[in-house]
Amino acid sequence: MTAIRTDVRDEILGAEAGSLWTKFRQPGGMRALLRLLAAAGWTVFLLPVLIVGMALASPRAIWRRRARNRVVRLWARGLAWIAGMRIRVYGTPPAPPFFLVANHVSYVDILLLLATTETTVFVAKRELAEWPFLGYLTRLVGTIYLDRASRRDARRAVTAIEHCTRSGDGAIAFPEGTSSDGATIYPMKAALFEWAVAESRPVRTATLYYQTPVDAPPARTAICWWGTATFLPHLIDLCRLHGFAGTVHFHSDPIHGDDRTALATLARQRIAASFVPHLEPLSPAESVQYVHSSP
Image (tube, rainbow, N blue to C red; front, side, top):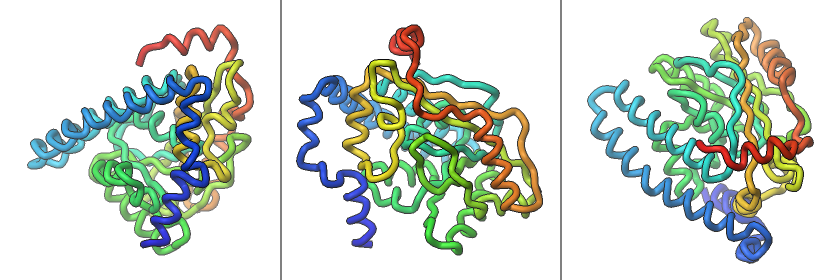
């Protein structure tokens, strides 16, 4: 457990822990500070609403899910607005219950999908449960944790996905296994597709990508969280942006298959077909539109 917590601290703060405050003295630093304070306030305000709402609705599971989903979706949309993210949606989000897979480039992906889908539970890496406060929040809303290094744990996660969908929820996974630099779609790990094959269930797919203004760093560095980037320094830099656009493309037809490897390959092809590499900035006209957009 100590090793996990040490790794978590490095992932959150890294070697830049002592210089975080200098980021707030850089251009856009005050904007970042105000946004982080607003995000914390919004979260603290809604947390009791979530806890009380779920407690009052506890006699029936469907009521608990409804209370949870409404608050979590409101929270995600509020955070997206605070961060300056203009959300673009193509296609129709799947109706629960569903199992949806998407490409993964940033922690922002979670906000984007929570803001645009209903009844959603995420499959996330086990280390997230150890994060201060965020770990508590993710446990509260029923996140399915996965030890990526353990095949046995993958089977446990598959069982949890089955229980999730049978309960009427939607489950979302990022089968690439890690966030990328946004240049391409990584090969998808087949283990999480086992449930869909065994139960002959459809798999829904979605493509995510982001764009930044013409005068800002490209999304590859400003939005995508990859390589040796640590969480808090990256988050501060993201909040220094005037704004950015987050796009989710929900594909209309689910995919099916009787082989998990083939199904993972098909999902990757479907997602890649509508993917936009994280290199192109927004045009000046688009920049004006999304900076002034409302949630």
